[in-house]
Image 1 (spheres, rainbow, N blue to C red):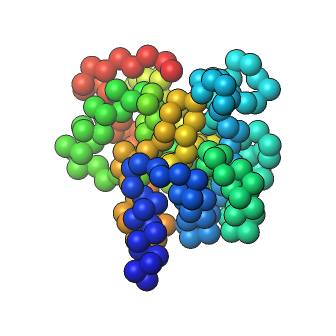
Image 2: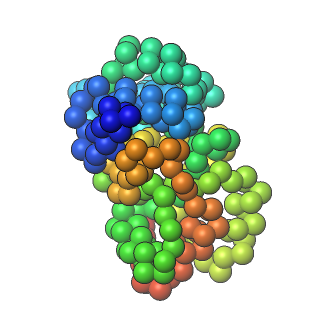
Length: 221
């Protein structure tokens, strides 16, 4: 048990320490937490801001699947180990929805203020993924119908909010993408089982209220 807890603590640290951490993280997400994952396309080694995929204007370099496609995401430890043995620097891509969490993301500056407001309001949050430009709050799986009703009930929804639902994907730490290294702004508890995540209703309501109250006008990114 000490060895397992020690490995998880290394996994959940906010700074990656190489290829071994990527495969360890991918195995934890897939085999222990039952979150389906797959390798992302790497950023172009000749220019980190460019993607190695065929799209010369890719807006999320290194932060999306390409081959295989997102439908290939799996919780099979043998497949995950094979993937990252052959692609040791590949970003870890979570296939959102189904048994896995979904996510709500917003620009980093606005997200920092929103999370502070959520803490003051006593809203419990689960893991939060941070990139240099955006933060993503993991939430329980939701349907498109549920999301549509939720957004319709809002008086105002910032255009910069993005939703990673069924059929979507999200890069997870300690991946490195064209934007830089991903980290946990709010890390899963060390040694915990599958992390707890909140309902999407609580997060969207609170984020919209926080952005309205703080007067944040977040640009689209």
